[in-house]
Amino acid sequence: MALWHVYVGGVTEDVWQYHPRPNPDTTIPARGIEHLLFDDSSYSLVHKETTEGDLFSPQNLVLNPNTPVLYAAEFAVPGRLVSFEIGCHGRLERGSSIETHGAMAISASVHPKGTRIYVGHLGDGVISMGRIDTSGMVVVTEPVVAPASLGSKVHHVCISPCATTLLATDFGLDQIVSYPLNDVGDLSPEPISRVTLPAGCAPRQVEVHPSGKYVYTVGVGDCHLYVLEAEDFIPRRIIARYPIGPLGLDDIGSAAETSMSLDASRLFVGVRGADSLSTFDLDVSGLPTRQRSVPSLGRSPRSIEVAPSGRSLLVGNWHSNRVEVFSGADSDSLHATGGGLAIPSPSSFVFVPS
Image (cartoon, helix red, strand yellow):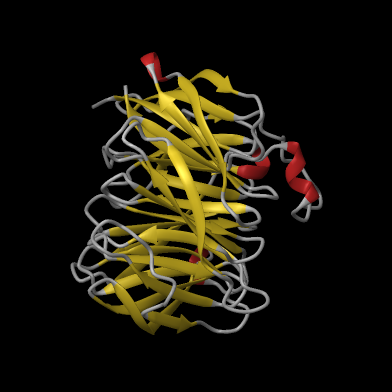
C-alpha cells in the first residue's frame, strides 16, 4: 500500500484556558482535524481538507479497528469524544459527540473488538470507558477509574497486545498502572500492578514490546527512557534507565511521544527542547542496545508515528507548525526526505488506507 489518508489532531485556541501557554508561543491554533494524503513510495504529503465546527482541541485521534470510524479526544473542560465516519475519499462525516466525565481528555484507546473505548484525562486523572455500537458510534461513557489521589494526571492509556490489560501513565503521581479487562473489554477499577518511577519523572507514554517481557516509558520531567520488566505484558519493576537527549546527555530536553518499528527492533522518541529524534535499537527480547539521534528539522517534535508500511516516520514539530517525513524507519538510520507540510500544532497521526 503506497497511498494513505493521514488525519492530524491539533489544539484549538481555547486550550490556553486550561493549560499553560508556552513562552514564547509560536504554535498556530488548529482549526480542527487536518486530512492529508501521504504517498509512502515518494514520501510526499498533500493537504486535502480540514474538518471544522464545534471542535475543541481534538488533539488525540484513534481509529476503530473494525469499522471505518475515527475518534477525537478533546483536550478541554469537560472532556469529550467525537466520532467521525470515514466516508468516500477519506472525508470525515461527523457522528456522535459525548462527554467523557473527566477534564482534558488527552488519550484514547480502542479495544480490538471495536466495542469499547477508554479515555484518560490529564486534568483530573479519571479513566472513562465508552461503549461503541455496531455502527462505530460511542453511545455512552462512564467514569470507571477515579483519581488515585490528589495530583493524579493520566497522560496515556493503551491496551496490551493480548487485550487483557489497560496500561496507564499517571503523569502527576509518577506511576505506570495496569488495570484488568474482561473478555468483552469491560474495565475493572482495581489495578493489578502499580510501578512507581523516580519523583518528577512525569511519565508520558508507554510502549509494549510484543514479547510481553518489557514495557517502556519516557519521562517528560527527566528526559529518560525507562525499561520495565513485565510478566505477560504487565509491568512489574524498573530494570534500566537511559538518557534520551542527543549523544546520551542528561538534561538536554523533554521527552515527548514514542513510536515502535513494525518489527519491534527500534523505539523512536521525540525530544523537545533538543529538537531531535532519538532511536533506541532493541534486541530480540526487547532490551535497548544502541542509541542514535538526528535533528527533527523543527521545534518541539511532540508527535511521531511510524507509517503502516514501516518504511517512514512522520514527525509533528509542534512549535514549528509543520509535519516532516523521515525515511529509514526500517533501517539503521533516519533521513529527512524534504516531504514536509505546514500544519498548525500537529499533535497526533492516524493512517487509513486510501
